[in-house]
Length: 507
Image 1 (spheres, helix red, strand yellow):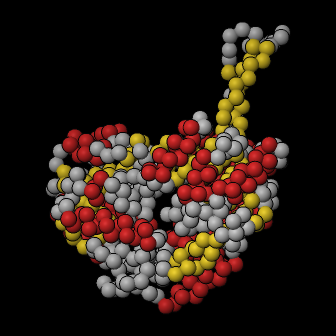
Image 2 (cartoon, helix red, strand yellow; image 1 turned 135 degrees about the vertical axis):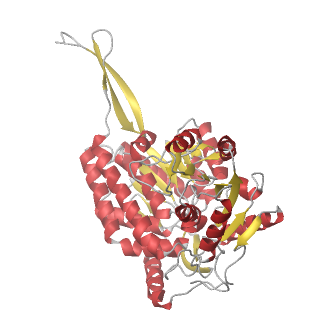
């Protein structure tokens, strides 16, 4: 159990932390371009900070616009004259299976790097993030030879058919909250469809992307198919978003940066997909098992330290069960284990100092605007980016903590009485990524699932993800869908072909 004064530390797990540091120090501190490890042209490096200690773990290459240019040139050669889009789809799938197998064989190393980078508990890195990333690549490896067009009946002595062709060079920018999983979400459909990729990982969490590049080289992915440029958003990321040689951009991150990516794509009239922020509502009805609803809503918000775009951060609870729900939610948060993510805890540190300070500023806002602080509300310990699990009750819809994405372990609980009213309140947001519905009345469930303006609605559960099920948002939560067959349309274009028929037996 975490102390109220200092993060919990399980000394028996120090060896795993030492192992993670050893893995980090063996990674190439270079960029991966055209199948080779190369220094940034500027020779600059940037620090990777351990969120547990606030100390620098390693230095990695600080790529900038000139390095992105090199990566795009390599990806263009690989697409225009290399083997990747010309090999059979089955061969592409086979290589993606091999990459997934290699990642699975290095699951412990990848999990340790992910926890060291991000601060999430090692249990989740080892048994959720890395295995899900492996499964995602396997899912799209299976799709590689099933991407095809249609034959279409037309008038006259003609036949018409379509090809689904790769777009070309794809620029992909991924976030720091699920680094290896978001890399897999992006790489899987893009590579299965025959595209080549320039991947820019978040500057806070570059290490697992570098390891995946290393494994891709080992399993035989052709040179230039996958290029990884580590660097900062305003330099390397901006060049990926605006590069005229990139045929499509894909971004996961904040809505603020998503607007910049969309603007750059619009100026060049090229497609982009955006998986952005959220302020997802959960509606708890009076007929529920309160204990289960509390547990599910707790996980919906506090999973991954609240650093989840789909986090259930606005909890609307019917007045009949409101007081019980608030009391039990407070107890759950107050007893949540916080500490060193290499030990047996439920919550580690936030990813970096900027995020840490941002979360604390939102907590201060909630206090100032009159929300009732039930537990938490401050820093945990005096070293590392640890934030106490925090619960606010009696939150009003116009408060900052109810309107803006906090991206941290802060739960806001609100009361409702009328179903039509709570639907309007839940939909009164710039975001529309996800929502949760807790009710045992099928009619209520049907009403809510259809009324809520969200890309995903979980019913009597939360945070379930399957590779075959699309994920994405309404409104300012993004454009396009990740995962499933739907994601393939983001990475292919349709070519229509007309052909005359002479003396056809039928048409």
